[in-house]
Image (cartoon, rainbow, N blue to C red; front, side, top):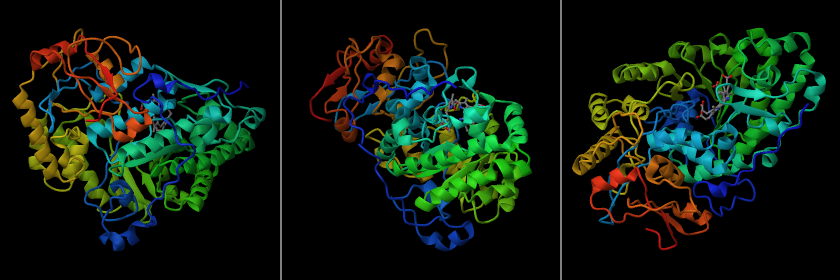
Length: 572
Ligand SMILES: Cc1c2[nH]c(c1CCC(=O)O)Cc1[nH]c(c(CCC(=O)O)c1C)Cc1[nH]c(c(CCC(=O)O)c1C)Cc1[nH]c(c(C)c1CCC(=O)O)C2
């Protein structure tokens, strides 16, 4: 068998704002809340205890506490749907302490796509700390879901287990030497995350710093059977012929492999939580290819072993189990000991609840295809799901990941405002999470950011709409781009926006040196958070407004060039 490739070591200094970052020497152990994860039934009793700032809504909901609304996040929220073509957004912020009007042509809905162009290798994107943090944060900054999932893959640990793999565009995962013999399985090593994926620990730590407790930082791993299916099949599979052949003719070999994944994924979950993950989802996507009897032999015992091992050292860590198409296995899934079972949309939520029993919370289960529907249709389906799931122990999510073809409808604040007027119950905030970009943390509007009340969101959205109207910005289409309507969307300044802004066509040339990109007239300014600035060795990256004759001109010229300047002056 081929030897495993070493972890990609990418020069993160060439990216984003990471100059001189000092990664933590070791995993920072974070104390999770002392509240034990309890059964849904019991939890109602302790429901009076309100969520604290120490605990994100999602974690509270999983613990069975009564929460003001079901938390929401979307599987595959990082990346997949951010597929639209180039788009230039004129943005208008009146900064509180400055008369300078600041613009941003950075469109986060674009940025995953742009990053893919610049970093076409999935492994590169998912193994570089800066990119992982940036991509993980993109959907959170735009939509403010209650969970921020690490941008990574279930297969990321494979090289560390001596199983070389890659993800090939248009093809998916490829395992170069499929594991089909006892000898090949013997070569598989136990995974030591600290040695092989230090970028995962670093990224999780950074995500916790960035997200604070406004959302839960979610880690994830693949389940043994699902990982084994990729390794034995050599990649994605329709019929799972090879792994079934092994299971039914040489089960000992498969059990040996499953045990290796079990020990390794237990370690990996512990590593993730030690570095900041506040809940971990176990993906057993392909376990449902097994008959119930075979699930009991080839998946269930290993899942249970992982849960037992993790709960022994990390009893408070919420564990979520997802298996797509799990209707036939539903009663068996809680036997793993997980805290949450994620349902797909082929199961009715109310029936699913009954079948799972009261000792487990549920996640799901809106059909991802519903996102192709009208806003009214989406609202109705969300409302149904929330009602059927009940008040306690529900995390609203899709039944599977966002489909490739979905381009989120963010077609205007007016429409969203309209929706907010008509939807007045607790579903409304979830509706916002699905349908609208999160309000922007501009200084003028930051007061309401982070609140979950729909009234506050409406007020903020109205303020943003007024800002946009007042500025009467021209609607632009970038050079060479297909003409399309510009969403009236107010965006944020990401601490990582430098690279993205450049790709958003505000500057044309490559950086000569960190922070210096090119010459031009349009003016931009962004600030680096103190924490990040410290990590980047001090200094502030600014892109300043200079030589503009009008706002309109700034936006127009923004497509051509801009001047980035690195200043080491004071923070603004
Ligand atoms: C296409 C693919 C990859 N890796 C994998 C596939 C599926 C191939 C198949 O159907 O057999 C394997 C995989 N990766 C993940 C799962 C479990 C979830 C599922 O059932 O889809 C599975 C089965 C989690 C994930 N895989 C990824 C995440 C990222 C975090 C998030 O959910 O946003 C997770 C949890 C990211 C990922 N992983 C990959 C890409 C291209 C991306 C980024 C964009 C996208 O979502 O398509 C490569």
